[in-house]
Structure formats: structure tokens, C-alpha cells
Length: 317
Image (tube, rainbow, N blue to C red):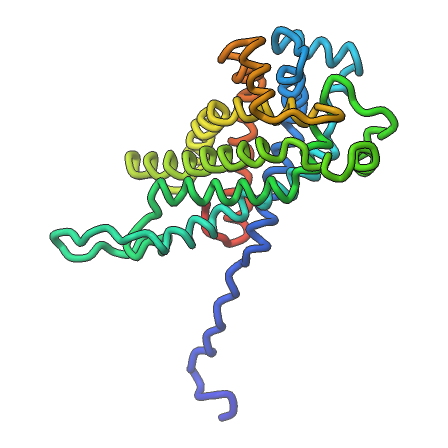
């Protein structure tokens, strides 16, 4: 009988192709955009606190912003923030996992135990297990630096719109501000503060992603729990705290350089000015606003990204 004997099961269908890197980028991008929109008001306050002549505290910064522009002042810079989140956020998280796996494949396998060589880890790296902390930090540094270097003009636009003296004539638009800065100061102005910004992005991604990775692993090992909301939430809140502490000094210098008009001073000159005016504690100005923003933002990013990757049929971060 055509089509095979009666009772034979139909031929098995091939499995669907695994989602590719573009799906991972899209999941990361969507998660970062969502988190950025929620926390943009805190980003405005952080920029104010880190600018020269900053208000004395978080409450004073909020009052100054509202007095100048009403409640709408807290939404300043949302367009470049969203554009940057979609590209920078998607790139740094989208690159982290493949870089971690690629570098992990190069690490030396652990020595064989009494029962023979260790089994290959579920992540398929290292010839014998999970990527170590050094691999995760290196992957974070590379992913963050590459993402920031590619998107620095959007960061400059965001910081200037959120600063104490937004550029006149840009109409609050992203293209207007970028075009005006390039005409008035040269195209190089769009990469002002790129050095500290790249350093911050490298430190942020390394500390944020590696600490999230490690906190999640330790939590699962200690509790026997799997991938779940409580695991993702707890690991991401700890990650946000460590990332804020590590990046605030670089963030202070980056903000001051990007607010600067005309001739540029080096990061070391700005650091000297901060230390002279405020002491070592000045390098952590805006820490409270930074953590109030970065803590919830980190939690939202990782929780949303894990959920989107799961829905897309991709492995967890």
C-alpha cells in the first residue's frame, strides 16, 4: 500500500532550528529598553548629581529638575536613552553569552577526579565544566567595551539632554542634538568621554553579568532550585549593588566629560578636580541615585531577558 504499511508510525519531523544570535539580541534589547524607560527619571537625577555645581543631594536634585521643567523634566533624554538601550543593551547582553561560551571553550579542563575525567558541563564549555569567573569577567569586559564604543554618540546626546543646561535649538530631538553638536564642535564631539564610557561599560558588564552568573550558580547549588523568578530576582539585585559600587567613579568622570562644551579636559584632569573639590567621596557622588536606578533596572533587565529567552526557546543566560 502506498505511503507505507498500515500501522507504521509517520516519519519523525526534524526538530525546529534553534533560535539564533539575532533572537538573543532582540530579547536583550527588549528587556533593556523596558527597564530603561521605567528608570529614566532616576537617570536624570544621577546626571544632575554628577555634573559640576551639582545640588547637595538627591531630593535637592529632584526639586531643581521639577522647578526647571515640571514633572516632564524627569523624562528628559528618554528618546536617546531608548535608542541607546535598544542598541547598547542588546549588544552587551547579546554578546556576553557567546563570548562567555567561546572563551570558556579555551579554558583548561579541570584535572580528572578519582572517578575519571569530569563530565562536560551543561553549558558545553571548558572541555569539562562551567566557565570560571575569569572567563565571565573577560567576556563582560569585551562585550561592554564593544557595545559602548559603537553607541557613544547616543550616550552623549542622552547626557546633554539630561544635564543642567540642555542645548538650545535641538528641540529635544536626538537627530537635532547630534547634528548640532557635530556642526559646532566637530564629529569628534560625538565620542567625547568615550574613554571613561568604554571603561565604565566594560566594568559594568563584567561586574553585572559575572556577578549575576555566579550568584545564580551559587544559589542554585545551595538550594537545589532551578531557573525560577526568585533565583533571577535575588541574583540580579546583588548584581546591581556590586555593579553600582564598581562603576560610579568612572560614571562621574564620564558625565563631567560629556557635559563639557568646547575644549576637552582629560579624565585625569576631571578626576583631579573632583578630588580637590570633594575628596575621594566625590568619586561616588550620585551613588544613591545610581543604585536606586541600577538596582531595579538590573533586576528588570535580567528577569525580563530570562523570561523572553525562555519564551523564544533559548537557553537561560
